[in-house]
Image 1: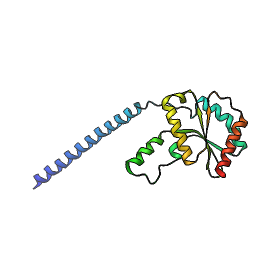
Image 2: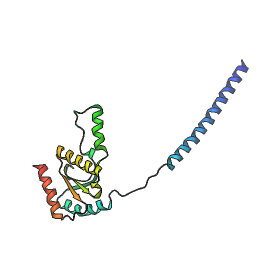
Image 3: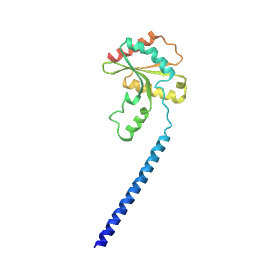
Amino acid sequence: MILAVIILVIAVVFLAFLNVKNQKKSDIETTKEDNQADELMPYNKKYLLTKNEWAFYKKIKPICDENKLHIISKVRLADLVEVSKEVNGKDKQKYFNKIKNKHIDFVLCNPENLAVIALIELDDSSHQREDRVKRDIFVNSLCDKVGYKIIRITQNEDFKSLLLQKEIIKAEHTLKG
């Protein structure tokens, strides 16, 4: 009987030793994985706006302030529209996929409730590519369907503040009326 208890104690100690050894090995492997994950971080910080977008923002900000409008940049299209509740299953995902990775350059909003007044897209030379033309047609059609006013400004356009201001005010009154 004593021999059986001694064997049992030795077995328990041995198993506990193996468990501690395996835990240390697991901790070492986890640390290696953490270090590898840190090494696989090929990212750099970048500015929110491109140089052209920043230049435009500096021009439009005083106009927005004067007209008591908020301006928000780089808003996902999926944050502005949603797939109709009548669409279900795979079709719902299909239609969501069409909007989830697109964004609008600037959104002008009512400061009291952030209701959208107008959308502004800056169209640089990339908007002449076939894929961008298709994207712009889709975005224009979608905005028209849901009732958003979209203002497109070409990169080389030397727009006057007054002209743009009138467009913004016109869009605001269109939505209110």
